[in-house]
Image (cartoon, helix red, strand yellow):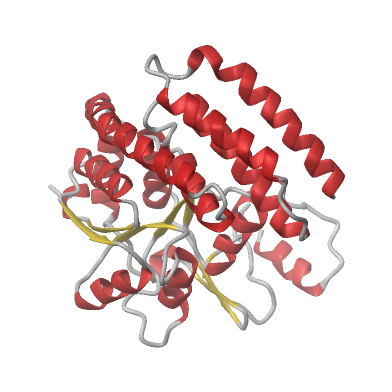
Length: 170
Length: 161
C-alpha cells in the first residue's frame, strides 16, 4: 500500500510557541510525524537547506525574516532548496492588500486565523487534490494565481491573439 | 472541451505532473481518505481542546503585556495582533473580536497616515482585558460591547478616509 500522510515531512514556521504546538498537534492527528519547527524565516531556510521538506506552514509576521520573505526566497532564489514546495501561509492579517502580497510572493494557500482543524485540513486537501500549475515569468514564479477565475472564464467572442490561441486549446 | 488555459504571453506554465508532488497519486488518494475521516476529525477536535488551557493562560499574559505597553503603540499593536491570532482558538470569542476591531483600526489609520485616537485604543484595550478576564468566558458582555466598538471604529475610519 502506498504510504500516505505519515511519509510527509512538514515544517512549521511560527514565532508563537502555542500556535506552533497546535499546528504540530493537528499535523500529528493526520499521521504526519516528522514535523520540524522554526521560529522565523531564516531559521526555516536553514532547515530547508539541510533536509527535504514536503510541506511548509508559515506565519506571516515574524522577525527577522517574515513569511513573505521566506516564500520569495523559496520560490525565487537560485539556491532554493525546493522552489515548488507547497506553502500554507497562516495569518491574522487578512486585509485584502496583505492577502494579495502573500499571493504575489508565491504562497500556495492562505489560512486565516483563528486556526481550525477543518480549515487547515481543507488547505492540505486542496494541495493534494488539486495541485496547481506553476507559472514562471519575468515578475513572478509560483502557483498559478488565476485558479479562482476558472468558474467565470470568458467563452468568447475572442479578440486578442492570446485569447484566440486559448480558444483553440478549448 | 478542455478547460486548460494558456499562460500570459512570455510566461511558462509548469503543469503539476511536471514537478515533484508531495505524494504519488495513490498515496494522495489514501491521504484524502484520512483527511476526511470522522476518526481524524475526532482526534483533531481533541487536539484543539487540549490546546485551549495553555492558550488561555498565554492570552492572559499578553493582556498584562498589553496593559504595560499602553503608550507604546507599535508594541501594543504587536501584542493585540497576537491576541487576535489565537483568542478565538482558545474559545475567547469576544476577546478575539475586539482585538480584531482594534487591529483593523490601527492598521487602517497607519495606511492613511492619520494619528491614532488614544481614547479609542484605550477603550479597546480595556474591553479586551475585561473580556479575557471574565471567568465564564466573555459571552455576557460580548456582543453588545464589540458591536459598539465596531461602530465607533467604523465612524472614525470613515472620517479618516
